Image (cartoon, rainbow, N blue to C red; front, top):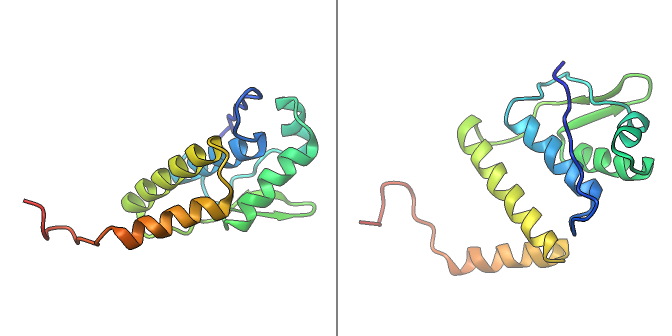
Length: 135
């Protein structure tokens, strides 16, 4: 198992649970945490980071909702295979999405607002497949 290294900036506008979620997701997508690797118990990570147990538990729930981890009583929380379109584009796409979500949450945007911004941008931007257009 790889060692989980997570840092939380308590002065950041980004909630601590989101910082944990984003860092673990990034470690998974970058291949530093592999399928089957076990995350530290919620209580242990909370104590290590000086955070409330509920904060770490929320980060783990968010990761589980995204399909990146699976929690089972007695077996802990383990990395599952991340669902993404492919090794290179998946990592790049996930990293771009992570950057966007982190930036917009820092601005105070709600999930609905950031999704609306993506929808507006998609509607206003024509899709150009690789090798087409451009010059």
